[in-house]
Length: 285
Ligand SMILES: NC(=O)c1ccc[n+]([C@@H]2O[C@H](COP(=O)([O-])OP(=O)(O)OC[C@H]3O[C@@H](n4cnc5c(N)ncnc54)[C@H](OP(=O)(O)O)[C@@H]3O)[C@@H](O)[C@H]2O)c1
Image 1: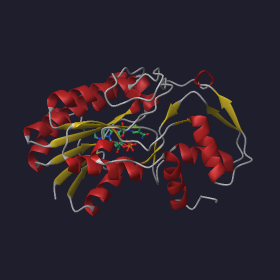
Image 2: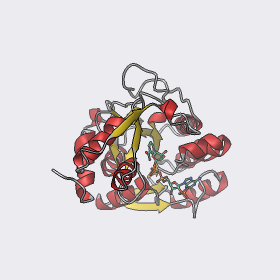
Image 3: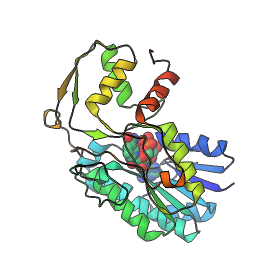
Image 4: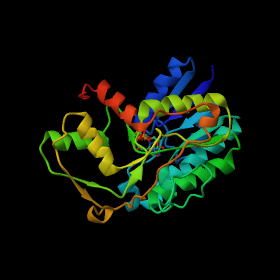
């Protein structure tokens, strides 16, 4: 049993991590922005110095990618410097720090899915802020893990699956991009994988994603087909047809080699989506 601190414990991943850790017999402590702003170094050092956790899972982040594009300095302070604060305070008490990062540290221009060792090259302020966080964590604390994920879907929160189904249920026309590709990842699967990785104690960079990747368009089609909306059409569009403050990377699938080498694998995304839909009572066989 380890004493584990989870930042962002009120968020989608953080809240699931709390349950997963407790279920595995760990002494789980959660903290969120209302108690501790990770961008405040003195507060972070004091909080972690008092708690003296064995492990810190840093899941807190400003995840509004369009907001980050509009306020890049805030994104850097919270996602970059904040991660560095947590990692440095963790180093002072000898904690392993696991930093949850994103596929958006890559530019999406590679001709294959990204491996853990590929060189990051972010193209938007959210990606820059998370890449800054990765570097600060790595420099501040050699006992670190960087765990990149993408396109999380979680029970109870707002996500792509609920947006697509909400539009279909309301009979609204659906337009979805074909040129944005990543791994849809079930929050529950990721939380179990993160706990397994921190329990392994092995420092390194990992890709915590359900296996396989797809376009937003094909993901939307899969969701509709599995929920009885097979006749609902989707108009294929490109990112250029859907202007937004943040520019998402194009082909940004991730491959899990490093976690798999430790025996930590997430199932393919299709059965993961089915499990999510079944738990929501939405799956139509
Ligand atoms: N969701 C995805 O599709 C996705 C994809 C790739 C990577 N990730 C990464 O996965 C991790 C977890 O994501 P999530 O979807 O669970 O995020 P989430 O639901 O938005 O939760 C993040 C939590 O962190 C808190 N937080 C934000 N800034 C903070 C600060 N300065 N100090 C303290 N707490 C702060 C938030 O509080 P407020 O709500 O008050 O801001 C929120 O409770 C993040 O590191 C994210 O970058 C997510």
